[in-house]
Image (cartoon, rainbow, N blue to C red; front, side, top):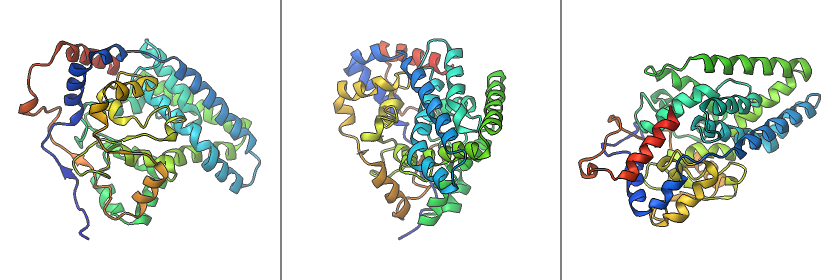
Length: 343
């Protein structure tokens, strides 16, 4: 077996703008879903914050093995749900006022120790706009990550275990993004205050529990397979984005509907299944995953999969000549809503 030494380079358009146009032309009824808000996400956020704070209180005086086990078997799930709530807030899909969404994101951030909600918004919107462009898409691993980890199980296990650190470091290459503003500073201030309160009221072990929940929820855990599911070339060397249709879409707020989300990023999580239901001919033909557990172990032990198993492109928002036909009115209106959401 020849070890992969570079990302898969593509000169083709990223697939989502093209499919959005096609779907809206074939199924204009989907347009009514664009721009909807789901305030229920706020209550999910509040419930998960209360749950994780309560768990931190309960394990504050327990043995370390209980703290770690509780974080892995229980705490990782609400922590991952909160990450999805931050994602929904980043797209302004909870409330109509952007400020209310940002405050909800800051609330969702509290039990995960590190102030990332508002900086995530900046990087994530660029991921949608410039999928596969290395200097603008922070979802792509760095070249040093891929070269360091290679395709061995132990390297990939360490990468998953330390995933939040790797993801944080890779944002340093996003030199074109100005991420610090008054909202980011508010996020930092509120998070620091919360962390100090947890230590003062519950102790350091409670704060460590919350940190472990974060690392497990996005890393060395079946939930961490979500990052492999979304854009790694695991099932088809030419399919850039994959959805997951399985039971964890319940606690994960349909985050597995990833092709649907990229095609329509201004539709909230509770409406994503309706996209697939209304336009099955566009999604049933795509490969998809049904098990995070299976994918987790396959990623670890399949040497055909490495961090280089990603598509990269140089063109920013390029649309191929074959797809440069005049867009229909529905697409123009949809893009206007998308732009408003990303603002």
